[in-house]
Image (tube, rainbow, N blue to C red; front, side, top):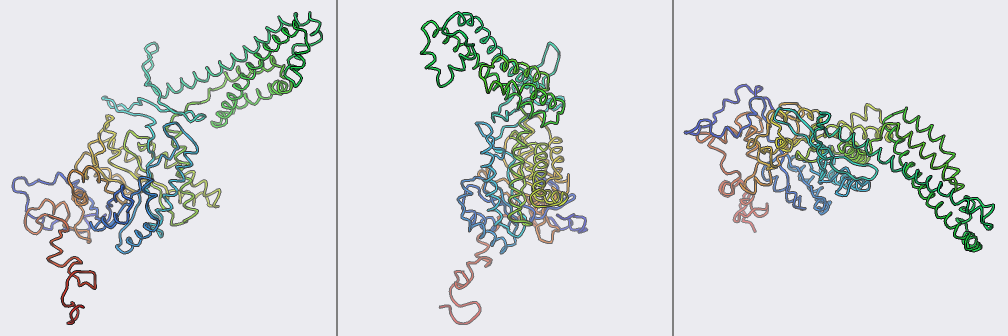
Length: 617
């Protein structure tokens, strides 16, 4: 990047004649970057075809365009795994031979472990292994440097929080995705409606708070009902006691002792020894006590689970008051639980202990069983990226690749600047903590390495798609400003904010110039041209020249005038338009290709050798 002012009157080079009918013709394609900065061709990268496992051939094709930076793409894991390991090393040899820079786009993998069936910790670990494998393989592209490797912040994750901008300029959340970490299940809260009774405005966050409170009350109620039914079943036994005491065969036996004998190894033998009338009384006693026992055990299991949830939640948020209540409760009811384990007839005492425990659980702050998916996703994805960065650092040290996390198209999970920023911060913190704990780094050294090796790839076309949610240009710029300090890499494509059309820059409404002028991080980052889809399909031409034209890149390596945007608009004189680039006929006529070399040098020209009088054998 070169400031034009440093070259004085370099802009005064003759730019050729204007289009006769419209002097401003062609200028609408320019981003007018030359007003303050010129971006040389060496800052722009072309991507290889992600559909091909022959990335070696794809790299050679891109080299023939004259591109100085090439982004090798392995966005499909099955295709990436089909690339021979020798090819990456051969691509590195091409890099050294031609002097180009390399970056790498890793596979599109969901780093959180969240899939259609919910969250699964084993899926997160599998995603981590896939991402780590891609990092290790991409290191061969530049084993002596810190190659930038891009991974999406999410792939298939629904947008955790849908935000829109209303006509009066307010930003509101219309829906909120939540997850139950215990089960891994997730879903979206229904769009809340206004409470006309209280006049309260709808809010997904308030709806989540209400849901957690209601869910906690319902679970407490269910456990309490089971405990109550257990006590009721036991009380009914009192009606049977009189019958048992009047029977000679059962005299001297309590209900509890009958139940304990019936559940022992001698239970059947005991029942068979009774008279028919006494046997029926004993069976009724046993059945009712069995029902009471089942309810008591169900209530205890439910209470135990709720107690664990409450204690874990209090410990997680540092709520010492609730934690103290729970510890006191544990001391008070633990004897009843232990007695029941030794004597199953102690049902009433257990049920009463559970009921007391429910009253205590009802007095504390309800645990947040359902969490906002955004916080959960950031926590799990940051674990994946931090572990990947740590494993790479252990293996490669100072030449570890830079993990650059990209914002996916707006409407996808973790696509906004705030989410991406929090994900990068969390990944850096976890990575730095591992360096301190396992590698003996000081905190300062660890933080420095984390900032160096984990950052953001900012896709200006992806963030521009927030326009479909009612946002405008100023909001796109504001999003970019939030992420600017974390940027390592930039992806370029243009669109109109509604579809992911991937036009060359300057052909849509992405405010590219204003974004790149926000921060030095944007200006110095490599910029990858991602316009390979519909643009090439419809127009069958490379976006490279259109990009140079849009950014006003210098034609020559000296980084001064003339510029591509001048040459493109000229119709006469010295710059008569750039016409067909690299025409084959040019090589045939002027000998600029290999075809005019003698056969011993790889050409096709027969006859006498160029360097001697002897004919070529």
